[in-house]
Amino acid sequence: MDLLEYQAKELFREMDIPVLPSQKIHCPQDLKGLKIPYPIVLKSQVRAGGRGKAGGIRFATNTIDAIAAAQAIFHLPIQGELPEILLAEAKYNASQEFYLAILLDRTARRPVLLGSPYGGVEVAFTQDKMQRVVVDEEFSPFYARRLALKMGLSGEAIEAVSRVIKRMYRLFVQKDLDLVEINPLGIRDNGEVMALDGKVTVNNEALNRHYNLTRLLQERNFEQPDESSVFPAHDFVEFDGKLAILCNGAGLTMATFDLVCEAKGKPANFLNLGSEQAWYGTHADPLERLRLGLDAVTRSPQVSVVLVNLIAGVTRCQDIATTLVEFSDGLDRPCKWIVRLVGGDLVTAEKTLKQANLTTVKSLDEAVSLAVKAV
Image (tube, rainbow, N blue to C red):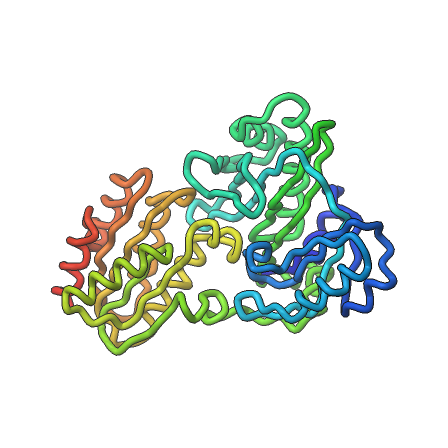
């Protein structure tokens, strides 16, 4: 389960990861007693990603503007969630913003360091911009420096960012976490770095070893999100057919759905997993999000065929293929699988799928034709 930003930053402080002066706001009137100087930024404290684009992050230069902004944010649902609390922070002017994350690769059973020199609201999770370092031996500063160099950093920025990565990794290991993310990490020309936003995903199975994490979670009535919260209603739609459709990206999903209908197919449902930006920004692990999606589209017993149409970026096609095979093997009934993947290491992924008797195709038209005929 995900911590809220202010809770993640409490853990950052424990690890000496730089964060800004801040104050929790329980109602707009709390801003009359604000202890940090203006200008400030007010942030909605919800688990959903995309707060900035949704209007959940606003700047204010005085108390009147801050109260008006807080009233608007408190009444603004983001992916169906209203904030119970806001975070007020000092405004920080960074010369550059980076993306950093440490997550657990459940397939490789190894921690993975992710980094991009393009962070913030407009971060683009594409293969050529997101760098990846697998921690395949005991962690050392070498891994942090390697990621910083792969991100294209130089000079003092290498040491400054590497230091943050090392502390993120220490937090990740000491607290048995599934994800530690900073987006963005701001850096100034003098080499000063600042975690401007943070996300931490807790491993539920490890809570009995970490009282302080349990305490943080008890500050709100957290519940494990079900598919309806992970996938908004407009992304997961059910019908009365036998063909399930699983894609990533709204355009790809609707194109696939339209082609199935044009071919006289009858969908049981369609699910948009979201772009990889949404995968990392909303849910801790893209492969875990894929597993949740597979469970959602195959839950109905009437589903007999699953059409998977995914474009891979940061996530490797081989990892997606392994996840599909593991899920199909564990399904309690036989289903016909038609899989179209686009991305790196595709040859290896297709071999894995074929060995498990999952049909692979190159073109979307062929995928739709085979899926409709299979039904």
